Length: 316
Ligand code: ASP
Image: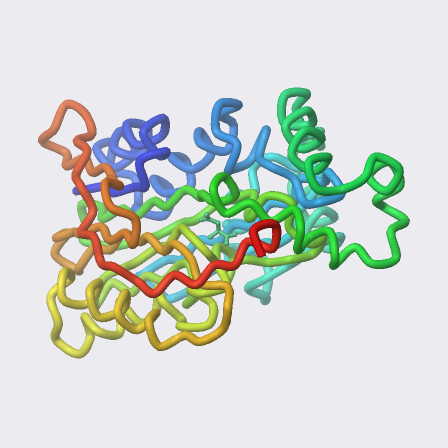
């Protein structure tokens, strides 16, 4: 039994392991671990107190995948409910669909009994105001929701230094079943309705018992365009080790053209529980815990240098 996670999953990984040790399934372990990260007010990249879109609305994206059956569930741009991963799980378990977004996702969250909640905290409200006012004149900021050219300001407010992060969990249970989950508040100050890779099966998240699983953080647009999580699992299907598969999937990102290329990170596990983490930013880590370990251990991710062509309009 093993759980691996992005390093911000530390608050939830013990809970995941406890579930596995008690005989629980990988999918239950993934959901429970991620819920603790979603509720963590210190983490501004997931769930409660996540960074909002440019209008100040916190929009959550999450997905979960069961490697036994290749069933999955996802929600995107969910507002007003904390446990996006549970909403995703319930989509998987109780609907003939895979993916709900926006108002439909919120309606579904209410239907399954999730508590409505204001996810925007005072400190994040202040950070947003400070950051946006560096670029946007006060009179426009005050009426941003009526701004006819909001796209202009999303462009200006883009802040790659602080915008990213997400939580990834992958678990393998006593039966050898594998599950993966991802949850995020996405790219800070994003255009309303923007979905990243996290809720898109194959982009930010993929699990298949027969080969392994992978989950991403970083610039979601890149993982969407390269189908990164699925590529990693596919490379394992073609016989590559988890390390080789990860390296190949990172290198694939160099084929992407366009001006906005930035950071990518992912964690991956093969069907035996061997794992690896990758990053395009040196010095990043991920965590793992096996059932014979008292606590999670941090490991450095393999660094793969990527073409980064981010253009910050403010420095143009
Ligand atoms: N991948 C997430 C997104 O693009 C953000 C992140 O992981 O940093 O929404």
